[in-house]
Image: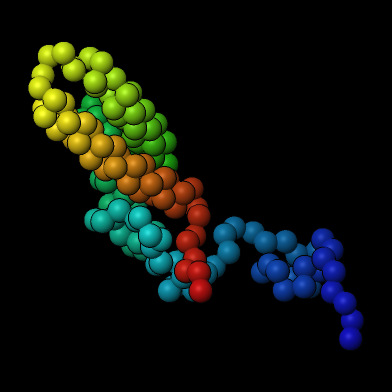
Length: 156
């Protein structure tokens, strides 16, 4: 029995041209169709599975909905979904931070102006919004990863 070790010329099954001296992979590796259409937990509703037909159009619409309305006026964001995904990720992250700041300062800024019941209701609204934004941040991150070429694989 021989032992296998990795060398640049013999990858021993790891790669498309494993064991073929002088051949290197070109382009993306092909995955089985059922693998490419897997959506990980937290994938946004309304966005088709990554790498399926027309999935980038649904991803673009989702990302535009995550951003301020003014972003729709920039042609570069519509033409390049990966740029839009970065803009959306930064925007959602700023909303998460603003929500944290709001939760931290609501008692000091409004405590003397409203009743304790109203203050608790305001805090509950902030916490609900914070949870929604955390989910949205995950959804945007997953879409951005897929736009950058990541293929999600179901773990057994």
